[in-house]
Every structure is written in structure tokens, then in C-alpha cells.
Image (cartoon, rainbow, N blue to C red; front, side):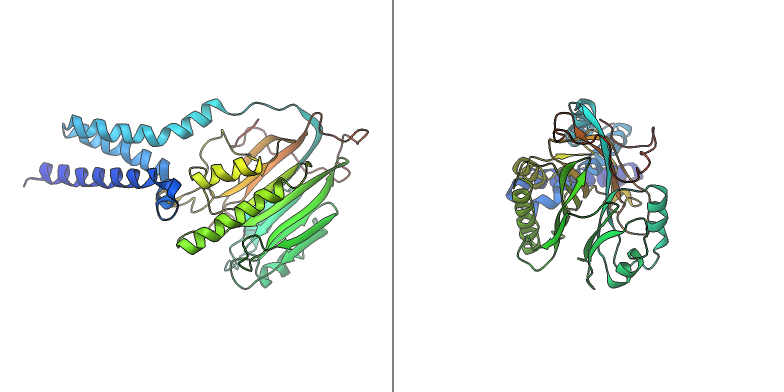
Length: 341
């Protein structure tokens, strides 16, 4: 077998693997393990395009066409979301910034996160993987006098840092597995805003996937508990391509703050074959998204997500002030990469 034939055979085997992964991803609504294959759609699209080009070079038009179709199939949802975007809500003058950051509990370099926080301050930050050592470092953040941290020695410590008084914050065991999530309230511009901080299980085993889904169902119930605006943010261990993500949005009434923007992975962002967007800021209809973006490398295997939100016009309490009764954090820089609407 000559070099060209061996190369053609190798590429056809790769195309077979891509088609197999695509077929398994189609069964994602059945849950684990099929859902695991649904998260890598942009990687599949890029692989399909590359294989199509190589097959055309080898004069294999049939397999090249099949590979191109697979690429289009996987790229289409992202392209449609980017082109369509979302209806723009009219925002009132009141706005505030929220962020989520998975710190990586084994990360001993605190400066990546603290330097980012100093340069891109948020008004409310939910942090995951809060170890006792991280809790000590976060206690020194004088710009956030209000905080509640539930430190653990494993990867499931969680906490919140705030520039405003926390009207309420408590740990909730949403999945019944002993792991804490957060539920709380703050006042913004005279309006009560609820927040849900999440770090769902890593669904590499069927039981872990069930616990992740249980926590999301409970979070959806919390989001619908009353009519006040709510932000859910954190590491969901779930991409927008998963049927469970769509089910969570439907059940909670929330929408993705990053929807319609360019693809920006938050996990393993430096290693493209595994890069996924699993950290999210999700908002209720009473809130509008002025800007949202993925932050830089902070020394973790995750990147933070930061969003500038506004209270939608018509959702301010009668007679409420139209400004935030706290030092205003700088707006996200105009023109930075992200999603704006």
C-alpha cells in the first residue's frame, strides 16, 4: 500500500469515528453516556471540515461530501444562535455586574484571580472550589466586605463575595448529596435580586450525572419560587449543546447571558480538543444583559464569566431609585470580546 492509500485509509477511519461520535450524540436525550458526546459539537465541526478538505485533496468526493455535511450539522446551532441573537430588552438606568469563577481548589497561585478581580471588578461574585486556603485569601479582599464562604477540602467548596449587604444567603443541598449550593438575595437600585450559586457534579459516571441533573431541577424550582428577578451562575458541568441545558432553561425560565456571542470556552480553554463552555451566567426575564464575556486565564482549569446586567425597564419597584446605592464598578470595556445585547 503506497503512502497515498495509507493516508486515505487513515482519513476514512477518522471519518468513521466522527460519524460514530455524531450518531452517539444524537441519542443524548437518553442521558448518560450518550450526552457526553453532545458537548463537543464545534470540535466535530472543525474535524469534519478538515477531513473534507483532505478527502478532496485525495479525490474522494463522496466521503468528502459526507464529512462536509457532518461539519455543517454540528456548526449550524452555533451559527444560528450567533446570527439570530436575542430580542434586545429596554434596560433601565440601574445596572450591576456579576461574575462566576471556579478557583481550582489545588491552585496555590492566588494572584491570577485577585489580579483579574482588581482589574475587572464585579459587584457580586460566586466562587467555586473554595478550599480553606482559598477562604483565607478571599477574606483579604477588602473591596468585598460582604461574603459567605463554605470552604471544603475537596472540589465542592462554594462562596459569594459582594459589594453590597447580603439580605440573605444560605447553603442548599439541591441534589441531596451533601454538596452545598447557594441561594441568596441582594438589593439593587431598590429592587430585590435573587441569586443561585451552583457547582454541579462532573457527569463522568451515571450516578454523578443523575446528581447533577437533580441539582439543576431543584435550582429551577428555586428560580421559579417567586417573581423577583434571579441570576443563576456557576460551574454547571454542562454545555449549551446538552439537552439537559435546554431542559434547565425551560424549567427555570432563565436565559443564557452568553447566547448569541462567539464561542468562548471556559474549561480547558488552552487545549482546544477538550475546550468546553460549562460555566454560565443565566438570567430571568426581569433582567437584561448589557454585556457578557469570558475572562482570562486565572491559574485555574476554568476561566471566569462576567456579565453586566440591567433591570429591564418596567421591572423597577415604583419609586425606586434609578442608581445603585454602592460604588459603581467600571463597565466592561467596550469592544472587548463577548456577547452584548
